[in-house]
Image (cartoon, rainbow, N blue to C red; front, top):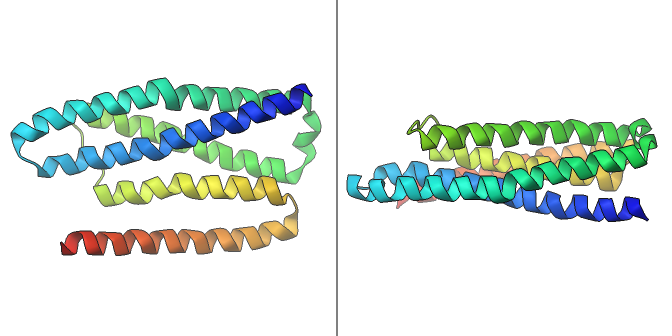
Amino acid sequence: MLYLYIKAIHIIFVVCWMAGLFYIVRIFIYHIEAREREEDVQKILFPQFALMASRLWNIITVPAMILTVLAGIAMLYLNPYLFQADWMLVKLGFVVGLLIYHFVCQHVMIQLRNGIFSWTSTQLRIWNEVATILLVAIVFVVVLKNALNWIYGIIGLFLFIFIIMMGVKIYKYYRLKK
């Protein structure tokens, strides 16, 4: 029964973590696009976006990531046989990718706070989809669990990536057309 409570906590904080990751990149995009505004407007927007990003990161995203990881570790501790399941190893690989994504976002946040604009808004829009792709991959691996379904899942994932990238390109085309 303890395992199920920890699993519920894990799922809840995954949702919170993902919400933070999705929104933080939107704030980055708005921050980058604020450079196109007048200087007096930038003086208002830059500190505001930095504050919003900092609060989101420190109050929601990082604690949710920590609790997600701790609950995941607790589940593995309570059920060490999960390490013998191929699907779990694949899931953990995607989770490592999500952790890397998390820390890259933290780096971008620090850069923007220091006035370093090394990403374009289009690059950030594409980057934002990486979290979606990792989430979809993790969910499919956990739900499907068997190797034959993984093949279909991977094919579906690549189709999903293609559709997302086309959506980003179409959005950019219409945004620049205005």
